[in-house]
Image 1 (cartoon, rainbow, N blue to C red):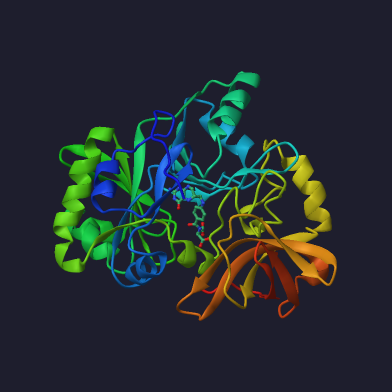
Image 2 (tube, rainbow, N blue to C red; image 1 turned 45 degrees about the vertical axis):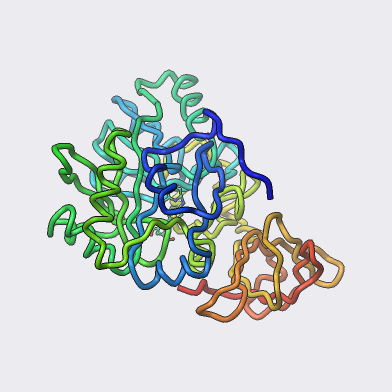
Length: 366
Ligand code: THG
């Protein structure tokens, strides 16, 4: 494969110097930024993540900041999740939908204060939709992308490493909660969250100049923990059922089709622009839904949607797949029609290298 041409459009991050030092083998593009995808090998990275601790440059998780008296109102316009019980210091995984109920993004929202929110976005240009709503509804709120760059610390030894750099108080941070910590005289948000099921934290680094000093401090403190540069792992996130926007779902899907119904309280999410559309589809229930899938055989890379076939009939598609070392089978994420989504249903998945046997499951692997 040819190289990717560097340019201003393809943004580097405050941690790129550290990432480059660790010799990544491949990058993807996410929110018009570079995101490493492989260091040693996807399998070696996977085993290391499950046993040790990794530091991930996830600056690609850009923040859309809402600031002003109408920030809370705007936030509720974006999502069918009821935000009324959300307190400052909490993170919520929030489906974001348009007026048809179609998924625009699946970010983590942080409530910093009643009048200040961060939306930590997946790979779509959410900023434009949010600015459009704020302007169209004449809301008293500032919307922009601040110079905030998340750095994730993930894996079973993440807490030990974080304690060494930020002190014992990090142990008290609960899952999907955050608080403020000092580093070199500056205050940073640290949340217990991250795009893996191995546990860990996300540090919201405020100001690009803080990037490498923090990166270096983590690596120095974690030498004896075998801390390594890492990245969201393609195998581990499929095992855990963590969805990838643009891959596993798009604007064509409702949150209910994505299995995100538990993050919707459409009835009470007053003001959500997709509320009426979602109330209509929620009443009937979705006709297709995300399912865990296993696939037999030696698969090519999943670089396109693979049709799921029941005989000659297309009944869904597989959108992510990887060979799992721990489960000894290819694990996958697919969207399956209601008629074929029962656990144990055997289908054929049509890849660029031909058909393979696929089995539908009930629960993800973690
Ligand atoms: N962290 C932050 N921003 C992000 C991501 C992240 N933005 C992009 C992307 N990841 C958004 N997608 C997800 C998908 C899943 C989760 C978080 C963000 C996630 N889900 C948990 C689960 O499914 O087990 C828990 C959700 C819950 O219980 O509330 O963590 O990773 N900052």
